[in-house]
Each structure stands twice: as structure tokens, then as C-alpha cells.
Length: 587
Ligand SMILES: Nc1nc2c(c(=O)[nH]1)N[C@H]1C(S)=C(S)[C@@H](COP(=O)(O)OP(=O)(O)OC[C@H]3O[C@@H](n4cnc5c(=O)[nH]c(N)nc54)[C@H](O)[C@@H]3O)O[C@H]1N2
Ligand SMILES: Nc1nc2c(c(=O)[nH]1)N[C@H]1C(S)=C(S)[C@@H](COP(=O)(O)OP(=O)(O)OC[C@H]3O[C@@H](n4cnc5c(=O)[nH]c(N)nc54)[C@H](O)[C@@H]3O)O[C@H]1N2
Ligand SMILES: [Mo]
Image (tube, rainbow, N blue to C red; front, side, top):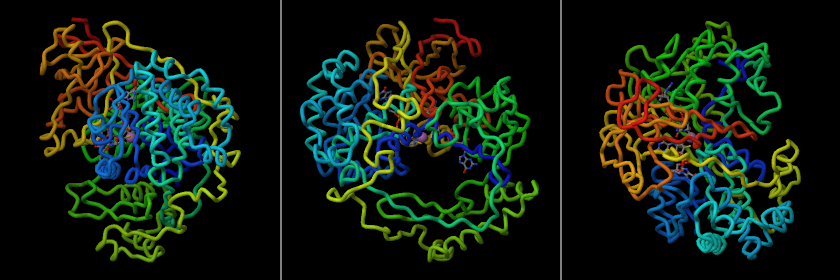
């Protein structure tokens, strides 16, 4: 509907608040992204390196199942995390790194592989570009240098590098998924990509496979008009390698500025709770208040619906058809989502909402069908199936077009980069004025009396959207604040005590959080699960339960390469009494 209307401002938080830096870094190195689901061949890996990827708490289901298979087959797991995550508990090595220093560790690993001759020489010679530049670049990045920064001992850095090299090419230095941490995230992920290239794991069994997917034909529709304005106008000359619209950028493009003659005036927000999703809530609210119209499509009364001029209630995924799912994988497959029950009340599926809005906007020529079954059946018949067949089987697998799950190393291979090689030295970054080789930059550490706020997932919950679900809230109905015993002692904190938090900018939350004292977190950081601390009363089970990490993410470190919003540069201190709304006095 938006494309028919002439808008190119279509975005999702899964880019600039999630995996965008990873895709840009891998495209810059290998000419291809990691994609979703990730092309990691975890099933057959012999060494899996997780850098702040907390698989097992992050229930990326396919990867978690494959990781447990890999563990059964004796794979080595190396986990780098300031917190003893569930994955760390399954690991041969846990590297409790000082937060925000991962780049130093990555560069030291690269140094060891190169200077101690542990890299895959034939792979590097045949398939990569810029080895000599890389070698010179990492000359001084020794494990001894990294120790002073990361607190990880040099012999542990060496041992883990040898372990990776020993298992290569069946080694995965996992690129992670939510990687918008400190603002130099694309460069950190470039270092991850380079490590994988040195290990020769790209395109190899137990490393990264080459996925294939089914192309679902578009239902007939006239050509969409060319948009007159795009979000990019708000950022002349910035974020040059962003290949998708930025959800955070839409906010900037909405807040009026004398530098632009055009700002966005209306939003349709479908299935994203922006107040808990975007950092810098004040800016999100400012953008919302600059709008002439905010339409929200949601299934529940979430924070975002409270700001809407119009709420269009969508029925849930169990009550509707959605567009066919086709995802890249070892075997291409498609999946159908179909209704198991009638929608309740006046709720409608989003295809119906889009079509009816389209008709009211005079765009009926783009919606030449009566219902979604007609579209799905037409698409499926082009693929040699039908809606009837898919209703019975749900998922259909297709043969791969080519026998190229793994790269044949004897063949010449042209990568989709400027040089046709895997670019250890990224010429596309150089062209746009970004560092072509990843450089270590120091990040701010917490001021005295403050602790770095880090956050993650709990296995039973999905972001902020499930915390009011009756079954899931029974499993976990509030988040807790992980605090190291040393810190608890200093502050005289007791287990299960409720406290309030205030960040470096004096911002606090009206909600309190329960203290969990545990050795599983470093003394310089505190940890909480994202998605709690709801403020809408109608969420009867989640209202005021736990604290929202997003309340404290007022400082954002924006990635200059692609506009990702680094959210882990915020620090909190403890309050023993409820703060007065928004601003708190210290205990
Ligand atoms: N159950 C569940 N699973 C999910 C989701 C969900 O909502 N619920 N969401 C899915 C989505 S969209 C995403 S993007 C993924 C996110 O999951 P991931 O990509 O795995 O994780 P992150 O949230 O980036 O990282 C969380 C981990 O990073 C650690 N960490 C914090 N700071 C640092 C640091 O400076 N260095 C290092 N090395 N580690 C650090 C934290 O202690 C924590 O263990 O999860 C997916 N899976
Ligand atoms: N502070 C902080 N911010 C983060 C993260 C974090 O860990 N901490 N994680 C980041 C990451 S990795 C991601 S991917 C994003 C995710 O961000 P979002 O996708 O915005 O996640 P939710 O907060 O769960 O918001 C989902 C909204 O969709 C609604 N919804 C659920 N099902 C349906 C449906 O079928 N139809 C419609 N129309 N609506 C539905 C829910 O009620 C809810 O309002 O957040 C990012 N932002
Ligand atoms: Mo994400």
C-alpha cells in the first residue's frame, strides 16, 4: 500500500537496531550478507565462537537445535561475554571480557593467526584481497596489548586462537544478530568477517554454507510510482553504506528542521512497539508529536497504541493468512500460515487493512483481488503447488537449483566485491571514506558509582510483545537486575530487594526492579532482560512488572557507516527510594 502511495520510507527495527551492521560488514568483505536465518553451518561445526551471542537465551530455534547437536558431536564452544550466559555454561572457554572492548580481542586473534602462521594460507592466497595490508595493520595488536584493554589473559587469547585454527575450516566465529552495541559495530563485524576469511570457513562445511531460496512470484500489479522524497534527505552524505531505511532515521526525518523543506507528516506503524524498540525515547516522542497522523496496527494495547490517532486492530497470527514465507536455507522451502480460528471482535488481517486503505486512497488498481486466498493460490500454482496442497502440508521443500551448498575450493570463484575476491581490505569502505581495515577505538567506561547497563533475551519471551501473555508470564513475570556480589556488598544490596535505577543523564524509571546477586556478571556491569516495565494499565499482567532497559538508553552511539544505533553506552546507579517522576534524587 505504501509503495502504491509513492513512499519509499518503509522500515523495520531489525536493521538499524539489530543486524544491519553485520550485513554491511559481510557484504563489504564477502560480497554477501549473513542473511536470516543465518547461514552458519552450526550442525557440522567443530568450533563455535560466540561473541555476545547468547544462543539458548536468544531462542533462535534452528541455531539452538543445531548447537545442541554440535555439542553432542563434541564441538568446542568459546564464549566471549561479560556475563556467564547459558551458552558460556556449555563452553570449553568463557572469556569474561570487559564490555565494549571486543574489537581489541578480535584484532589480537587476527594477529595470532597471522604472526603465528595459523591461518589458512591456500584459502587466503587464492580467494582474498589485501592480506599484506592487514598483516601490517595488526602488527602491534598483540595479545599482550589486548590484555590491558579486555582483561583477557594473553595465553587464553592464544589458546582460543589455536583452538579455532585447529578446527578450521569447520570453525564459526559467529557474527551474532543484535549487534548494535557501541557505534563502531560495522567495523567490529568486519573484524569477525576477516577472522572467518583467515580461517577459510566461508563456504565450507561446519563454517558458512551457501543458502538457496525459492523466489515467490509477485501477484500482478501496475508499476509503483517513483517516490518524491526519501528518508535519506534527512542525512545528506551520511550512513553511506546503509542499504535499507533506518527506523531511527525515520524519526529524524520527521522532526522538522530548518535544513530541510520537507519532513514526514504521517506514519503507519505495524507490529512494532517503538517506545520500547528505539533508543532515545524522548526523540521518538518528539517525532510522534510532530506528526499530523499516527495510525497503529497492533494486536494489543501496547505503549505505541497510546500515542495513536487511529488504532487498527489486527487479528492474531492464529486467525489469519499471511504472505508466504520463503527463507534462505540449506534446502529452499516455503511455508504457509493459515487461520486456525475466526478473528475475534472487529479485528482484521493486515492484508485486508492494506487493501481497504488502498481502495479509500484511490489505489484500487494495485489491489486486483477479492481476498488473500486468491493471491496465495495464484503464487503457489506458479511454483507447482496450490493453496489446497499447502493447507495440508504447511511446509514444502524444493530441490536446490545448483549443487553448491559448499564452495569447491579448486574452482575459481568470483565474489561480488570490487576486486572479485574476499576483501580483507574493504575497498568499498575506502571508496566511501570509512576505515578499510578495522581500527581499535576506546569506548567510555562507567563513571564512579555507575555500572554499564547490558541487556538480552529470556528464552520464553519475545521482546516486549509477550510479557502480558498468561502462559509466558507464568514462566517469568518480571525481570531482575543481575549484580555482582562485590558490588552488592559495597551498596549493601540484598537478594530480592527492589531498587530503582538512574542513568548518567539523571533519567530514572518509575518502576523498580528486583536485585539478583550473582557471580555470573562482571563487577563493572549490570544486566537485565529486555521487554519488561510496561506502562499501559491494560496490560494487566505486565503493567509495572520489572523495568524497561529502553528507559535508560538515552545516549546513542550512531554507527557512521550505516546508521545503526549503538545502545550499550549507558550507565546506571542504584536508588533506594522511588524517584519523583523521570528525575530521581540519589539515595
Ligand atoms: N527468546 C528470545 N529469543 C530471541 C529474541 C527474543 O526476543 N526472545 N529475539 C531475536 C532477535 S530479533 C535477536 S536480534 C537476537 C538477539 O540475540 P543476540 O544477538 O544473541 O544477542 P544480544 O542481545 O546482542 O547480546 C546479548 C548478550 O551480549 C552480552 N554482552 C553485552 N555487552 C557485551 C560486550 O560488550 N561484549 C560481549 N562480547 N558481549 C556483551 C550480554 O551479556 C548477553 O549475553 O535474539 C533473537 N532470539
Ligand atoms: N532497549 C532495547 N531495544 C531494542 C532491543 C533490545 O534488546 N533492547 N532489541 C532490538 C532488536 S534486536 C529488535 S529486532 C527490535 C524488535 O522490536 P519490535 O519488533 O518493535 O518488538 P516488540 O517490542 O515486541 O514490538 C512488537 C509489537 O508488535 C505487536 N504485535 C505482535 N504480534 C502482532 C501481529 O501479528 N500483528 C501486528 N500488527 N502487531 C503485532 C506487539 O503487540 C508489539 O506492540 O527491538 C530492538 N530494540
Ligand atoms: Mo533483532
